[in-house]
Length: 458
Image (cartoon, rainbow, N blue to C red; front, top):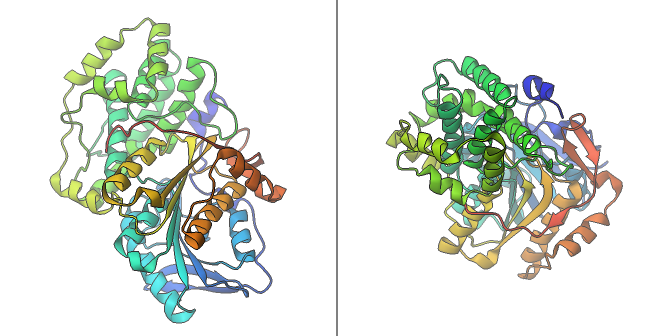
């Protein structure tokens, strides 16, 4: 990767499923149409086993048009395997497919689709609620709100720590950038989202050229637990400069819309600003961050005082939230943790868009309100967001299905999971990676034992 990519990258998030065309099974029954104007797609194999996987897609970028194809799985080869093994698939495009309106829209439109499927195809013997990214959150919320209609949940790279914390975390990182590097940037109530985003990306790129700027970028990233690993397959760079550069790709692009369109979009939907940092002690936040050692190294290299910059953050004017907007995000949504059915989550260890600490927050919710024995959290050693092989996704789904069939979880030791995933053919061993060029690239299953840190901003 190079600096040019930071300044000129235009690849939208979560469109990689369209990069590889996978043929339908010869006798699949494909149903397409719309429900009250919202497009849907369902595929039912001739040997349907009675199980339906209801798929919730993620939040498509507001900087690009939504894809015309309706996704039925995260990885295209996962779809093929499910159909070949008798599973029916269905998904709505959602009335609001882009931005954070997908959660509210998805809860309504997926329920309508399940009603339609039951009336027009047949009542499933059991239904799995599944999804990726914001769709992983939607999948959990759907099952929590209507538990009798679901038998299990699979959340891939899900924002299961909740939308409120996700936006608060983005505010913390951007607050540090504004306070320490670019005071003219807007954080909330942004009047010109595109200009503000352009200015933010320019400031981030300029800061990378100076050790002091890199140190402050590392601090900003650490306040949101953003790791220094952007490429899917390559490990994190060994240098401070390399890791901070990769953190900044997330800040500029994958989380970059929080400087503009994502922020204005959620404020319009919520009826005000739903994020706050009043009462936040940034010294304490950094002390709990998984990235604090990188920050200390960066400040030593730059010859800067970390203590002084933390004092600047704690002295800076804070952002207050609008109570009405906070209530909106409370509804759409933070999971309660209720689990009358088994839930499996899958996350990459180097995800800087939805850091794996999201999983810690959800596990804590389940311990408080649900049955911890019903939750299994799996991790793969990889960077980027939602970057799984089909073999890893299928192995994860098999883990859930075994729990649903036997009421017992199978072994989830990484060696056993990787062995099971490796038994699938080469078509199932590819992953989306931005480097050297965006697309599906061959790799190996990478399940690993991992314990994420505490969620910084629930």
